[in-house]
Amino acid sequence: MKKSKNISLVFNNKMYLFLIPSMLFFLILWVYPVLQLFYYSFTNFNGINYNYDFVGLKNYVKIFENGTLVNSVGNTLIYTVIVVVFSNVLGLAVAMALNAKIFLKGFFRTCAYFPALFSAIVVGFIWSYVYMPGSGMIANLIEVFGGQGSAFNPLGNFHTALFAIAIVEIWKSFGTTMIIYLAGLQTVDESLLEAGRIDGCSEWQVMRFIKLPLISSTVTINVILNVIAGLKAFDYSFIMTNGGPGKSTKTLMFQIYEIAFTDQKMGRASAFSVVSFIVIIAITAIMLFVMNKREVEL
Image (cartoon, rainbow, N blue to C red; front, side):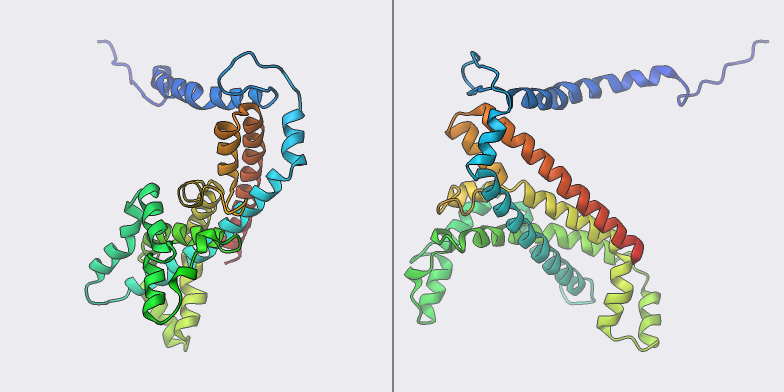
């Protein structure tokens, strides 16, 4: 009698054939475009006419010479810091409040998360009307309290426009941040909190020395997600201010868009994208290192 062969999917080489479709998609839709981007960054390609020339490092020199890169990197970093700090502080505060035993807790959780359901375009248009000078919601409230609503124009002010669109990003994203923190807080063993209170810890000490260390991985996830969202900011500067006033809201992504589609300098935009890619990877890597080290210390 023949012994039946033991068929193992783990050691069966045929199983790797299932990877071929996904690998083809990855190569065609990600690897090839990235390699093409690097290639175009050394040309004067305009995005339309394929009769372009190889210009070497000229595109890279140009973006460093005219101050465009420095301005957009500065705006992006300021925007990212604002979003990361306030989204996490607000998200954690709301998550802790809604993790307590309160009436209509589910309703309030839904309300807090509701802004995250809207698309960036819808949110941008809503807040454009909120910020509108004279007839906007905030301007009307200022008028009600005896102020001059027509003078309120945060999107038209060089010094406040970037902060105004950052507030919009915080309003939209803090719900997602809150949900992640809420999930982390629900994993904390209540007996540990009670032990801390019995030992004489105040509520602040319980949060600082027990809750935060136990949800440190959740903090890392939220910070990284908010950093990535800040570094790739484009929607609100495009919808609400079109990069203005002046260059005050021109982020890295907006600057790439403008060079590529307004100036029709696809080669230079490709060079800008390569530099932006390196900047984003470097910042993300540093953040991961710092946050992981912080987790170990906690």
